[in-house]
Length: 303
Image (cartoon, rainbow, N blue to C red):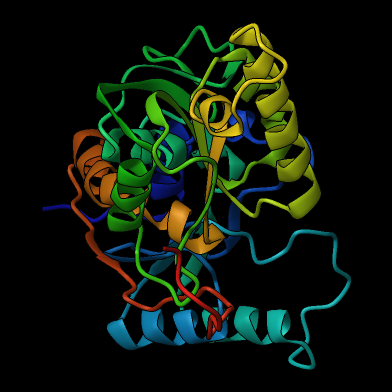
């Protein structure tokens, strides 16, 4: 079996997760690496932390593929005085490249949000924020919205989400009446409070995402309750009755956890595409390390 070089593997990655899908502020793609280096082993992780890099090098990886970027903003130094510079130095000395699939992987077919939606069993899926790509055989764009095969309570769906994503110390948060029956679900891996308008327009009963903040969720829930009162044509409607039909509800997951689900597809798709394109089959491995930065959650559990 032949071995693909880094330049060839990058072409595969950027066919699966086109850079043109990335948000304007984002800069995914190849960060470190020799284009002519052979790629036999690819290590995967959500975050390119120093500990993850050390894991990759210990395993003998030729390439590290992460979801989150090492650099969110322009830098003027990669010296070992800062942790980013030390990571670059370790990668270079270890002959290991770094490729990032960030918002481009969020929007792609079998990307972050589609992996979440598929993991929850959603059918009749469409992107929340579509991208017009005539070259794609599949609908692509930010987030996904679809229907559950059958209605379930918000509490049951929350348990399904908790079972799907990797465990963290924080668990997940729910905003809404736990007995509320839900059928239509919107999802977006990672920070998702920028698309509340699109979620409302999709008529989703519940929105599953990460990094939700107090005021946007509180305001959205208050508006949902008010609109529910108006829908049942009684301003004095029982608060419980209104809560049971107030959409959208929210399920908030840890950022890291919602995005790690992507690798269930990436671990299959990357080597398969390398083999189809170049006859090469790199070995893949996903880091078992939890890179969620929060190490404890104190307080009562949800009743």
